[in-house]
Length: 157
Length: 431
Image 1 (cartoon, each protein chain N blue to C red):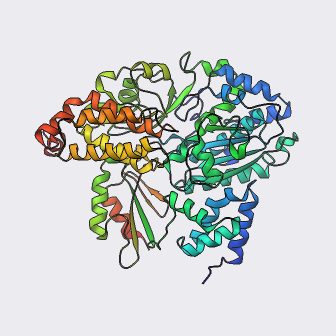
Image 2 (image 1 turned 90 degrees about the vertical axis):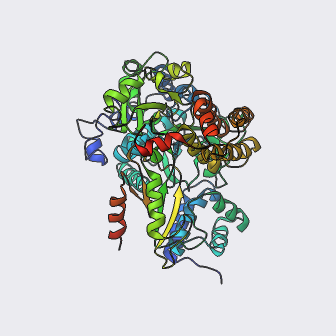
Image 3 (image 1 turned 90 degrees about the horizontal axis):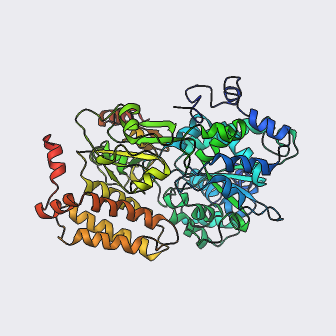
């Protein structure tokens, strides 16, 4: 079944498209709207975006797959992204990463069976002076210790 | 310290228009004067040329010269694109500038767009900066409501629209031509140069791409004049620079200092020295893409020319400090994994070279290295350097080449002992 956007979201996409001299430039912001609305970017969403931007679905798919921030499978309620690049590694990112694997019982790239957490390893988040750093649903948590991270996870609703 | 960009950075109200325009900060005064007096665009370009401002994103290209390449007599629309894709490991200055002082960037965009004759500008900001993008949108809405952006900038009749555009997670989009492809809605892969973007860039039109910090310097230069800017820094590297310091120092963070400050002053005085139990071993002075220096180079001055003479580069001035507890093979493996992950796959030497370098470094680190591996790595670096469309291949090779050459005995020890003794000693507390 073809996916549809809520009228408000569709209107939002039209406003976004109007900002650019060429429709195709709106592909990333429109994909973000689709991801927010559907929780991820299934193939049907790529087709929908292709329709809005007058592109072939394959072209949208090629863009989606190039970037790391679009989920092609439904992610957990909380997406926990651990920076593992050098500056954070110098400050103990490996310990943070292995603690998360243990605590959540999953490997990076996986989602807990209850659908609560998705764990991902990511590259430099530009938080190098305050590492180790983790993003949870886009919000930065920095200068982390294992205890601090546990408190943050415990406090999530 | 904190003379130009960070001057008012600790004011909690700086983020809002009222704080930025307060008498102590004096924000938008330069733009108001430029548009009020109808200062000629050519005059602004000349001022920036004379200031000697060099790009703060990594390449260090003279900003005024770049602007001068934009053809004047053309009917094609011109664009200004702000590179806010800050993704170079060890670099986190633009994030703080945009978070705490967004209007400074907006004022820089106004002046720079006007100078090159652009009526549409974009901030291409990395996708992970969701919160920062929100701050910029908010600041832009405030400035637009006051008539600083839009159809009639400061009542001058000049029109400028600005779009905040979030990327979606790809280091390569910090490379200017890949950024343009991404902004046009394609996979972010680099283009062959020439033609350079100043002549044929976004949608084929003349386009200037400048880093956030570069543009943040423009209001000061236009307001105070080139000589005031040249009071800071050196002859060839004028001005101040935000140094992002990370690693086991006592006070890591962003510091605005005159270019030419010594690495020792930065680490020992500004950052309070190394943390307890850590001794300085190595520094990557310009973001992860530049050659590593060992501790003997600690008196090197941090400017474009001195770092080049020392065998490295100023780059983005992301200063990654490593102590004697860090294994250099492991550090290099970490960065090589980064480049392998971020290689866009367009050019074979980079795509395959980063893959093989990671494999070889991984086996050395895990005690499976061959005695010939260090030379094999150097050979591979030779096949990467200068052989790809964009500098990512070079960026991947330079840390490996410098690390193998500078810390060769550590690579050989890994291979001979079939394990990492540095890490073992650090864990046991004996090193």
